[in-house]
Amino acid sequence: MKTNSNSYTIVYAAVLVVIVAFLLAFVFQALRPAQEANVALDKQKQILYSLNIRGLQDQAAAAKYKEVVTADEIIDANGNVVDKGSKGGTAAGFKLNSGDFKAGKLAVYVCSVNGQTKYVIPVYGMGLWGPISGYIALNDDKSTIYGAYFNHESETAGLGAEIKDNQKWQEKFQGKKLFKGDDRNAIAISVLKKRDSNDPNSVDAVTGATLTSNGVTDMLHDCLGQYIKFLNAK
Image (cartoon, rainbow, N blue to C red; front, side):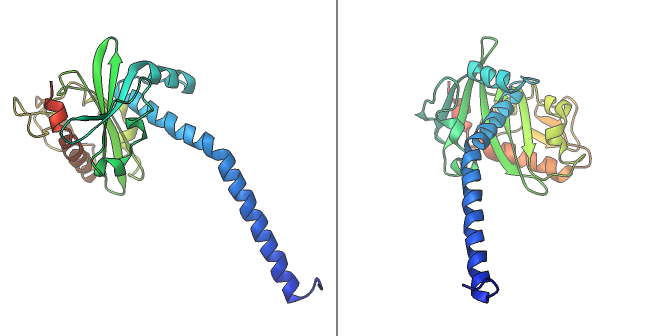
């Protein structure tokens, strides 16, 4: 085949495409286990953050997660345990995502912090520019918030992104109540622009990020509302 012919050029380009595609696929498969491990570690850290456990390096965080998470349960909307999960929290509920939540599979992380039982519930919603998510840790009364952590994909830096970046704002959720008084049939915790400073059911909205703050409220009401029967179970 003549090297200066059109057919040679086409064959040569096709061979190069195949080789590059093979190399990219090989690299992707080689790196995939490490990428999945990093994603899992980040998720474990977020759960620890909701339990007010921060500042740990990777290995220490992974070890702490295995220590404090006694089960990663899967429950249904009736509060029935579908899968008890396991100690170390990676066998069942840990594998669920927002799609599973929409399908009625609800994750609950049963944890022990300083000898006290805590329940961590994942939440999913929409901010101003894209998906937001988080974890809400509850005391064993299943009403008082022990801690909270929120994440986002594309909120504005310095505004909506503060739900993730501002630890002090997240700490405002500590001690707040999910329910209004004795009414445990509806989630009351909200993020409000104007609120009574003594209100146990609300947190100040992020300054300049009203729509993102509204998204957090909707997320908490929608997601935690699916856990009502679990939250009312003794």
